[in-house]
Structures are given as structure tokens and as C-alpha cells.
Amino acid sequence: MSKWLLVDGFNLAYRCFHALPELTSSRGFPTGALHGWVKSLWKLIDQEHPHATLVFFDLGESEDRVALHAAYKAQRKPMPDALRQQIDPIKALTRAMGLAGIEQQGVESDDLLASEAVALARDGHDVVIVSSDKDFAQIVDDRIRIMLPPPSANPKLGWRLLDAAGVQEKFGVPPAQIAHYLALVGDTSDNIPGLDGVGPKTAAKWLAECGGSVECVVAKAGELKPERFREAVATNAERLRLNLRLTTLNLALPRVAPEWRTPNPPELFRLMDEYEMRSTGVEARRRYAGGAVASMPVPGIGGAHAAASSPTASVAGLAPAPRPAAQKAEQGELF
Image 1: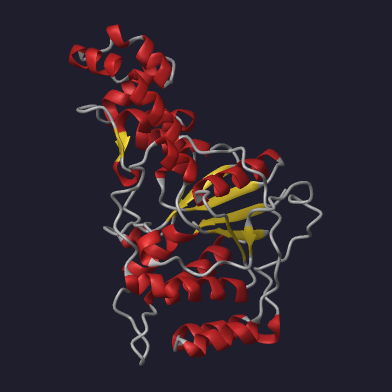
Image 2 (image 1 turned 45 degrees about the vertical axis):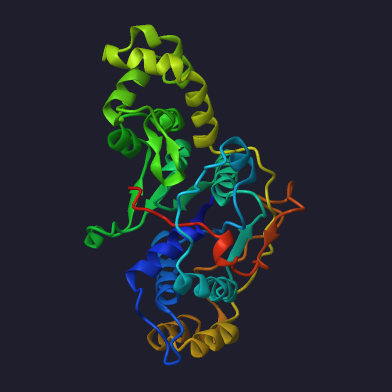
């Protein structure tokens, strides 16, 4: 079967922005994220040779999770204005490159991406998720892997693939237990508080001894070691159950039938000229000479997406960037 590349859009955009935060056009318009975005996608497509690439963006907050926990992600700073200005151009460049974009109002893009990844894997396809978000570790299996961006502290490591063995090595638990692990230790990037004093090693130990689930840990609260945590686990049982609902990805969302595109070199060149992306524009003209790019195919709609689509999802015609007050998408160094 084929390989699909699923890109966590804002996660990658933040990294591209922070890599070149001061780069601007002669008019003072920020362009660092634009250069990094295009070059990162080219590199990944050249490296992985995917059958197709889907790019997922957030459009508003996660209504389901905020309803459960009003403080969900509330601690995140608003998107920097210099990056916010580049979101619409990033989406325009994505379209001109012939890549399909997916977003849905009120639904977290992590859930959209994860649902699509699991569905593709179920159909026999291989999936590479481009993200540093540790939430995706819970769906890693024989067909789904995570492509981790170069770490900020050591960019020379380059892009790295994380498989199931890598998840086990990093967290001390297998992918199926990641959501339970995060429920116990908490997730500061999503403003989900864990149990005070419970760190990665303790959480992994409890899950190994208690059947791999939060519910089992709660049931055996009176037997846990160190003993000082027994009362805390018992009295915070409901909070741990809530945490698990927040950390578990929704894998049951309707699939979206993307509006497949072919690359539009004239529009791509126009955008790059408009934003004075000179060096990147030279590379684009080399790659798209003649208007055909073999590494960016257009899959037939009769394939993986023939049976299901969501009428509420926006595909390809990506929405404009949200205003600063509505967009809280700061991405931390998660891996």
C-alpha cells in the first residue's frame, strides 16, 4: 500500500517561525516562517516520497475539551503577531504547492489528524505524522510513526522517526498507555495538572504494575508505592479520569475527503515574488520547471477517502488566520 504524510500545521509553523524570527521583506513583512515552511515540506517530501500529503490546521479552540476543562490550554500565550501575519501566506503557499489542507471549526486538529492516521493505517497504508506533539505517541504502531523535527537545543540531529520501540524507550510505557501516562504526570503544554510529585518513572511503574490503565491505578490506590501517594490517588480519582478524557485523542471523527490539487507553479512563483522569497523562489523554479512535480501526486478520490467525508470540515480552501485573541497555539519543545 501507499505512504501518507500528515503534517501538524501549527506545530511546524511555530518551529519555522522560531528558526528565523527576524527575517523580513524590504517592506518589513515577516517572512522567516514562510521560507522554513516551504523548505521543510520539500525536505520531507523528498525524503519520504509520500503518495499524498495532508496538512492539518487548528480553527478555533477544542470545544469538547474546553467544555470538560475550562482551563484547557488557557495558559498559552497568544500567537506572536509576526507569526500570525504569516499564517494566511503559509496556507496560500500550501495550496499553490498542490497540498491539501484540512481544518474544522471547534475541532482540535490533533483529533482530525489522529482520526485520519488511524483510518489510513486500518486501510493498510503507512503513515508518517510530522509533529513534536507527544499526544500522537498514543497512536504509534506498526504502520504509524512520528517524524520529529530537529530539536531546538540540537538542530544537527535533524528529522528523526519515532516508532513504537522509541515511544517505549522515551516514556517507559508503550503507545497504548501514553494517554494514561499523561493523565498521571499531567501535560503542562495543555494545562492539564497531574498528581503532585508523580513523575515519569513513578507513573510508568504504576502502569506496569496495574494493568496499564488509570482506572486500574485508582482501583489499587491502597497498594501503591511510594505509600505517600495512596491517599492522593484515591481522593483525586475523578480528576485522573477527567485527565484521561482530555489526554485521549478522538479517533472517531468523520473522515474528510480533501479537494486534491495539482501544483500551481505560476501562483507559487507569484507568492514568492510578493514576499521577496528570493532564494526559495529560485529553488521553486528549479523544482517546478515545466509545471510537473513527481513528488507531489494527486491521489484518486476513489481511494482512501471515497466512503466518508465531513460536511462541516474545511478542505483546501483554508480559512484566514484567526485574530490574536482567538488563537492560542504556542507550541513548546515537547520531545
